[in-house]
Image (tube, rainbow, N blue to C red; front, side, top):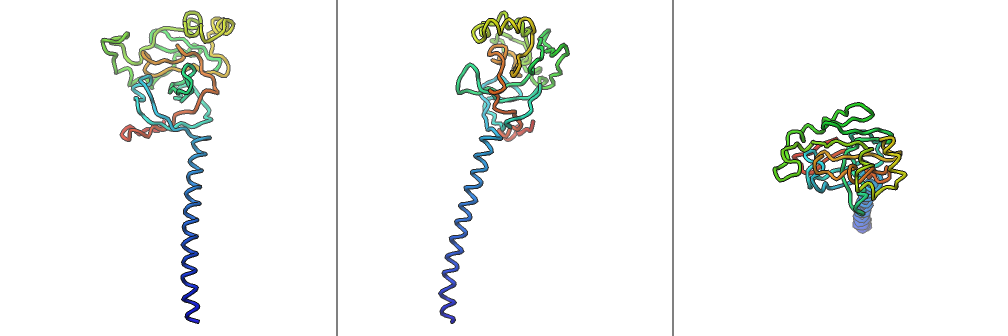
Length: 221
């Protein structure tokens, strides 16, 4: 009887060991699956490239964006670059579908009301170098424009849009349906909607919610 017990004990220990490893492997696969599906359908992990959002975001910052957000004016988004297939831009929404947008005397007016741009306060304190086209101007400096004037005078817009599309914008000065007008916080260097035009809703990857790198600039938005 004692001998049978000794024989059964190693067998049970072996079975227990196999169960432990199978459970560990299954748990590992499940965790990877959750992360994979999460970043495919819910989140987006992105790296900032370039100076267009300085000083809010610097080149090399790493951010997490949420997909399918209910976007509003002032949100920072990651989007597919309309002029560089396979590339992504990080910009801020200034105009929503149907909004009128006017820049005058370094102020933005949306639907006739001055847009409160607290997110530009840091950029107001940083000046462009003497070698810049806007030497001595703050990063936040915004030249005068309207959507109508861009439709009339922008060479990039002339290449991007049809005459009928541009004529409608000239008449209405409004952001077309299903699109956004976006700008970078570093207004003097940003290649944004003033150049690349309106951003289709389908081109938006997600809304930036968290900067996790560098660690000393960890921020939730």
